[in-house]
Amino acid sequence: MLESIKRIFGKPGTERDLTEVSGWAQRHGHGFKRARGDAGFVIDGLLDGKAWRMEWGPPQRGYIAGHELRLRMELDLASHAQMLLLSTPLMDTLERQTFEEFTDNVQTQIGTKTPEEMRWLVMFPKVNLGTLTALNGRFGAVASDPAAGLAWIDGPLANALEQATAGFLREQPPFVVMTLRGRVYLRVQLDAPDAAAVNAALALFETAVSEALRATAGSGDASHAWGQNASTAWQSLQPHDTEPGKRRR
Image 1 (spheres, helix red, strand yellow):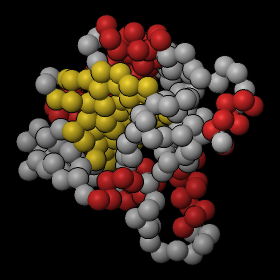
Image 2 (cartoon, helix red, strand yellow):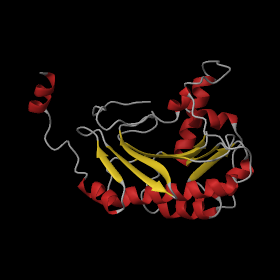
Image 3 (cartoon, one colour):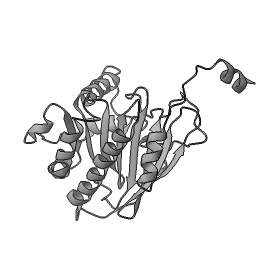
C-alpha cells in the first residue's frame, strides 16, 4: 500500500536517465546494474585481470552531500601502505571537525567508528606537496610513510589530478583517494553522473592503482586481510536492496 501511494504521489521524472552511462559501460565491456528507483548503479570491470567495482548512489560519508561516486579495487599492496589524498577544502573541513569532536569534548582517543579519512589526518604526517606546483592549494595528503606517499602522487598521478581539475574536479567537490588494507578506494561527490565524468574518474582511479603498486613495490609483505571493520571504509551498494534517499555509512 505504501509503495502504491508513493507511486501515485511521487514527483515525476525522479528516476534518472542512465542510458548514457550504461551505454558507456557496455562499449567498454563492463558489467552494469541499475539500483531500484533513483538509488544508483553498479559497474564492474577488470584492470590487468583484477576486478574493480564502481558504485554511484546515496553517500556513505557524512562529508558528501547528494550522491557519491566510489571505486574500489583489491591489490597486493603491503598491509602497512596507508596513504590518503583528498581535496583541500575537504581536508580543511575534516581537520576542523576532528578538532571540534575530540578536543572540545575532551576525548583522548579517536573511536573505531570514526572514518579512516578523519583518523588518518590525526595519526599520520602530512605529505609535502610543495614541489608539485600544479596541485598547490587544491589537494592535501597524509601517509604512514610520507616518502612513499610522495612517490605515489608525484608523476603520472599528479598529472592525472591536474587534468581532473579541469574536468569533474573543477569545482573542488569532496574527493578522496586512499590505500587501505591492500585496496585502493576513490570517493567523490557527483550529483549527476554522465559518461564523461565516469570515464574520467575511472581513468584517474586506474592511475592511482598503478602508481600505488609502483610506489609500494618491495615495501613489505602483502596482505589481503579484510576484517569485519572494513565496512568503515566501504559498504557495498546492493543494486536491488537500496532504497532511494537512504544514507549508509
